[in-house]
Image (cartoon, rainbow, N blue to C red; front, side, top):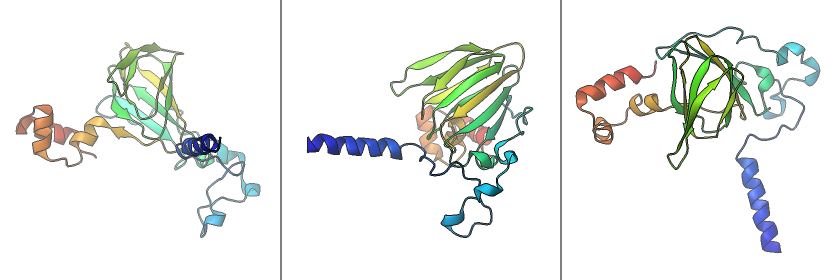
Length: 209
């Protein structure tokens, strides 16, 4: 019986440590003048409704070369999210626009199609693909840590709203991670069957800006 209790104790602590910690107060608006851990939050009596409202995603952001404009809403730019264990993103797609394969190491994502038709999917650790075209009003979930992707396959621009169960989900774009951060050329040439000229083009294309 003692062994069962011990196992349950460790499993419970593993689950707790594997996600954002529960807040210990109603909310925590960051105190930018904090000098100690004890006063990292503003006094709750000084909080206003404006601390809990964000207006930065009324319209799309700046489009990149893949036809995607993504605007993240996290605790770094929206103070009201601090310690609440969640964040958000607005993703706009030009016709044919792509959100390249990527993953979030610390969060599950739920994507809601606000407008358009988007080919969406993820790949699990058994290398099985789960993908289909989702349309306005439909939702798809991408489990934590799974590589996923999106492409506007409609004839009009598309918009997705994504929600994460972490205030800091993290983001790793596969092409940039592989070709943009200095992995040795010899390894990449062998891994992907590339010659030096082809690899040079990819490294130039996916170098971080």
